[in-house]
Image (cartoon, rainbow over all chains, first blue to last red; front, top):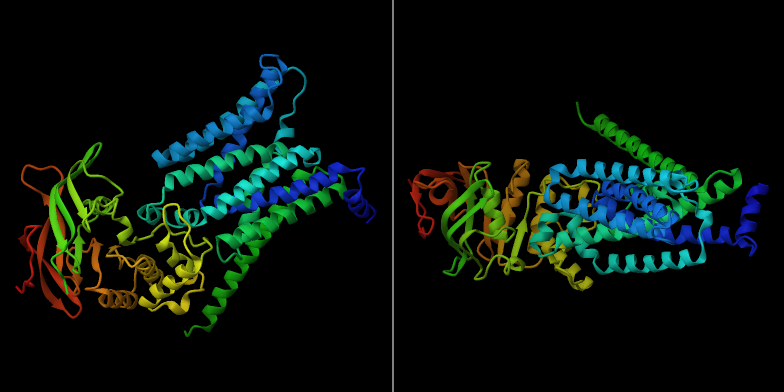
Length: 295
Length: 255
């Protein structure tokens, strides 16, 4: 209990700005996870987002190597990550549109090759670089500048989702019909993929690759069980994402474990619990129906 | 109820994929207000023909005029009811929202109140207005198909195109669907695409078949077949009586 009181004390204290920043990072990233995660879930492109977020490690590794060896002094890992994210989004998007049957293979190849390139370049980078720090990140290291970047991305993503909501909903629900209505479904798909890629890059530098992919899918998946429509799924997923981030932060502080991993475990437990509850309710319902129906 | 305005006209249309000639020298037409069945076995090129009509594919030769314009330009005048076989039951959406989708534009956002009114009107046409707020996934297969008809009707189209409307439907749902179509017949041109080569609804005015190749041709072509009354609610396609695709057959063939 002392630890818990200590956390809330630190949250309000000006002496611990990193705790407050982590709290606001959780709040701001929840909007991205909620809105983009719902689109990724209903479009069934979580695998694509997973591949992009892991391939980013290749860009980070190359940027760290070029910077540390003095070949491109001061090159930020984020630049390498953005290049790799957009490149992998372009390759995966093109293959997905042109050759559906090869989509799975290409997604897995990009996922594995990107990560391997990252590990190889980090191994050759002078000094010690731990790849796992990029896999799980550290939400407690977020600066005020990072928060501004997150806020800008929130505004852009929420505006795009509001402005093109009917087109996004139609192309996710029934792509053929959307095409007949004149919606540029390929452009919508590539736009979703590109925005997701950029959001993944920003978010993974703050919270790590594993947490990004978990939070893009688990809050939206959990909200999907009760949502009436895509808009309420986005709102529900945002609330779930914030709840998971905040509880991960609290539990991480209280029992002194990495916050990113704790957030993923809490989100995963909630999602699996909800899925199990749903399954049991369905079985009961069909069992009751069976009992009521005449022999 | 039909008039002489041509709703759809194919003139010497050919289409092929890189390694496969699908359609060759296809010519046929039908008029506004008619109820048309386009039949062909699986793999005959029905889907390709449908894509050409909907403007999703372009022919390599010949011309297609749909309601007086190219299919791409007239796509907003068409109400399309797809099979929607790849429907995701976990997609969170209500019946009313599915129907409103029929008004969605390429990039614009519409007026919510007006869209809701139109969606409700369309649901009334298929007698499902009482289910407007229900989740789409809770409906039976037959009800879902009628909701898709309402979605197609929402924009008050000049022509309704239904792809395999009775697929995976029980008899009662099929009867209700055709009752809705009977109500619309005359005011709207209706084109049904189906694989059932033998029988069509008695609402049908004319039937076109994606048939064998013309002599010396590689791709398939379209011919018109005569119809005869078979039993209550059903007409039989007379495959032994071929008419030109461009022949206007006003009198029903009665054996």
